[in-house]
Length: 282
Image (tube, rainbow, N blue to C red; front, side, top):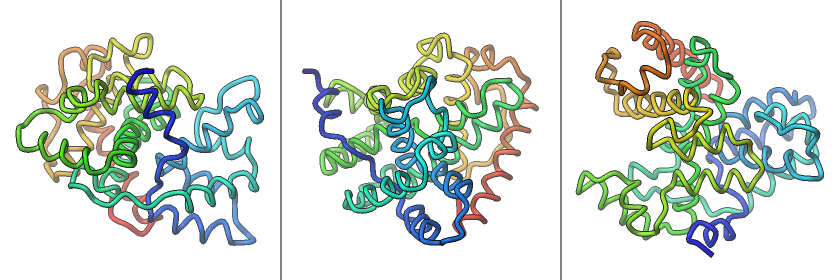
C-alpha cells in the first residue's frame, strides 16, 4: 500500500469552515428554509461540497451521471440526507487549529472560495464549464485539509520549513511523504466518485496544465485563479501583466490580458456579494 492509500483509508470526512457550519445550523432549523439556499451555502465550503458530492455519487444515490456540483447533489440527496451530512460533519471533527497563516482553516477556506469564484468568472470568457471551474477551484486544496487533519504537528513544521527556505510546500510534502497535497486531494476525490475533469485538474494544479489533458484549459484556469487568489489575499492588487501568466497558460486560455483583468474584476464583485451574504470579509 502506498503512502496516499494509507492516508486515504483514514479519511472519512473533511473539516468544514466553522462560519459556514454555524450559518448552516440556523438555516437547516428554519421550517421555511429554501433548499436552493441550503445548496448555495454548501457550495461555498470545500468540505461540505465534497461530502454531498461523495454521497450523491455513491451507488445508492447515483443516477446515470455524476452530480456536477453542490446544487445537483443536494437535489439528488433530499433534505433528510443533507441534514445528516451537516450533523455528521458538525460532530465528527475537532476544528483544525491555525498552524500557520498558510493552514489557518479560515484563510484556507477564503482562498479556496476566491479561487472558485475567480475561475467561474474566467469560464464566462473561455467557454469552459462554469460548474466545473467553480467546483475544481473550490476543491483544489482539499489535500491540505487532509494533511492538516491527520498530521497537524508534522504539517505545521513542514509549512514553517517551506516558508523559511523559500521552497514550495509541494516540494517539502513530496520529500517527506512521497506525495503532495495535489495528488492526495485528487486521489481522495476520485475515490469519492468525482469525475476526471475535477480530479485531473486538482492533481495538476502545481504542475503543467497539460498533465490534466484533455482538460488542460480548465487546469490553466485553476492555476491562474489560484495565483490571483493568493495575490488578493496578500492585498497585492496590481493589474494583470504578461508576466502574471506563463506562456503555456496564456496559450491555453486564448484570451487577452484585458479580458482576464475584466474576469478578475467580475470575480471580486461576486466575492463582495458573497461576503455580504455570509456577513464576513472574503
